[in-house]
Amino acid sequence: MELPVYQHLRPNVTTYKLLQLPPDVLEAMNLQDPIQIKSSRNEADLVMVSPDKTWRLRQMNQTNSVLLMDETTRPGSLIGKANLPYQYEVVAIDGSINTADIPIFTGQLPYGELYSVEDLLNDSAISKNQFFKHWFNIGGCEIEGRACILSPDFIKEVVDLFLTLVITKQIDYKSEEFNIEETTISSELKGVDSRVTDNIVTTVLHKFCDFDPKTSKFRVNNEKVAMFYGILALKSLQKPIDTKEFYLVWKNYLPNFYNIPINLDLLKGWYYKNSGLHYLDGGELSMDIGTRIKELFACTGQWELEDMEPYLKMFVVNKKVESLLLKYAKVKRVGSKKIVVPR
Amino acid sequence: MPSVDLEYSKVVPILDQTIKNDSIISTPYGLSILEIQGVLNLPSEPHGDAEFIKVDEIYDAVKFGRLQFDEKNEKKVTLFVSNSQRLLGTIEDLDVPLGVLKIPNEESTITMIDIIKKKIIFKQRPLPIM
Figure (tube, rainbow over the protein chains, first blue to last red):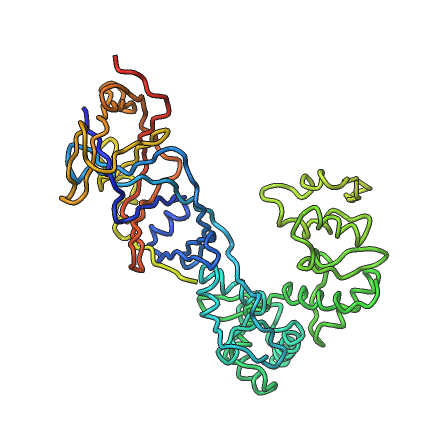
């Protein structure tokens, strides 16, 4: 069999582009999920979103001539409609929310322009479901039509009230059952504190509870609560203290009669040890790996590997932090522990 | 952030892997990809000895060769370019299928018009015809 091959002299008015379709994209298409392509102000950043997934589109240039041939316009011949100089590589990502300009709510709303959560969602390179999961986690909330982030101190006040209410209403906060209704909590809390709104309750419940979509009910996630209070307790430390003493400080931070197991392991990535515990927020460290490791060693000259790992895990994919460290530091085994020291 | 819908309902029926396709190279919608090393030098206007055709009565297209399929091995193809060169190529399955997007000039919807799973690729240098 032989086919004559043609090529258009001038490019078609319509532009054609090639998009890789990895299995997770095909899966979304099979489910007929709505898919959108978003471009951020930074042109290089193209993302594609389905309701629950985000993919980054990277333009992969090719030096070969890639011709898009059509067999139907002139049966019996192949006609090149276009030359496609690149294809889009599609990689699943977590997506991100740009919170740089989002005001912090401390109980009062700072003056500013009207910018809603929907505006923020439209401006963020992330799918809708991933957005809300992440948004509630960082304490995001809409107040008077404006997107803002609840300050940790304000969140603590609301969680204190919420847990006290759970205890006085004799709801078992250790139960596996989904036993908390949003409307009940909301109406009660609004009665106690006039600053609390329905949206604030929604944020707090999603941040500190597990949600059951079937019954639309919540149950307290005690680990998340313990972690939140633990970080605040660490942050409040004026001077380094030993672990046993810290457990007392932490317990004191929790609301009265709220008794849950606490463990320093929950706070990995928030502290370092140097003659006692110190607070260390990874968000304030450099995103350059070499600099970041120097900053970590400036805090303390020797790290337990497991304490250091959370500060570095964003630099490794499918690899252990330990193998990343080989280039920058020495890892020694001391008893059952692995200790990291500078080179 | 500006966003556009990706309309792909046309290709949903061909997502099914089991659909039979009589054509060796093209998709059920008749599209395929031909990849050549280097650049294809084409005239900007029809002139000279080459064979030109009109596509859809609007576009000029030039015949740059003929594609011959090997009768014994259906993965092998030869592309004869003009009267002097031939390229030996193969039909390969793509690692990741490629969606063909049609980008309109002003509308707010991008349409996926086809999914391509194979390509015709010529990796070697041209050989003379003897």
